[in-house]
Image (cartoon, rainbow over all chains, first blue to last red; front, top):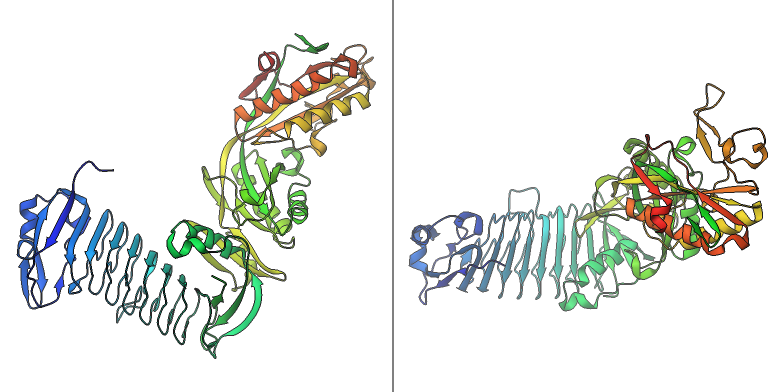
Length: 275
Length: 298
């Protein structure tokens, strides 16, 4: 543990009505900067640029351990491209939380907007509330979504989670919306309370894990009851996360597995397991 | 030094640096885990002819294995890293991949990574899939009973091979009984294997031969049938000699196994026909590890 006090950014009571880009406030971008310089950093806000001092009061010194208090859903790109250290968001987060992140830990005490963990490459994100659409997805124009690291959402998640996902794990304690794992290339997406319609739409490889399916997608085959050693390993690992994951079975279990999307490459899998 | 009537000769075992690895084999039940482990460690008594020396280290309870199934822990040693890498892949591919219900995992977390399932995955013909769990990559290969799960790599460490001692007894039955008692006790020591059949070898060798093509030949000094015609190392009443060879992941483990084995043999005592305990060495010039019997027992 660092002996230094965490660097705390507390949002002013009155905030601009426009959306703001907060991506400047990450451990690696603030490392080595004196407080005076941090206060003058510019934060894009609508068509203007504000300084950190216009938006936050700042205290503390440890740039490796940042806390943003009073965050609102207009704060976009928090922790984007973060590579090290810890970022704690007390409040809600806007769009693109942790976009392109490569390392470190982002903890959000509230809900997050769209495209959280988009193109994430490493590190971990822990979201206490809900997450919007396109969690861990590829932003428009990109060929690959999340390609490493781990995202945990304790609430529910919107549609298109894991779109074009390439690697890593999205772990959801609640429900995930429609088209979960669409166009997925690889990786793992798991939702303990199930999914909406069309899971795995266009997926090539990768693993989706749910407790049930409302309807088996027409382009998925299989459904035989089988046992997979890899699930035991996975569940044992996830059990350490606690919360809803603490209940995961850690002995070999029988599951149903569907292979698809057979309209494409079709080597992905949807596993229906007694979670 | 005499212990329970058994003469402990003032000599030492000379052991060599080797490369070693541990792998864990699990299966639906212990029977099938052992089928695979026995096959994997078969024909692996001596690096001279087998490429590797391998053996089952111990049984694994379900609580000790990565996938919660019963299994066996196997140690494999070789004189060179290249040979070890080659043999691990060949043996796992032919004996574990083929054996129903098995899975295979690395049994070491330190050392250099060497392929375990890394190349075996191509058996999946494109249907293989990988998962990274806790930073370790596993391969899932579709096979006719479901899926063969194997970790991508295991670890190779510097190890010790060729620790040994010789049990000199009145006759062969007494020799076998003493050797079996030693092996029974030594099997409880971690990080070691005794690679010969039943842990015991009766064809101890000396360096060199009268035939140019052979680098080693029978250890005539300990052959009871040659006592009258060679410079014998056997006491007059000794009619049999058994050797126990020990390979271990660490020098300390080989030392401990030697101690446990020596104690077990001594416990049988002179009354059970055990006359002396000796050890094999090459004058101390070839091997980097020396295990002095009297020092170990003191």
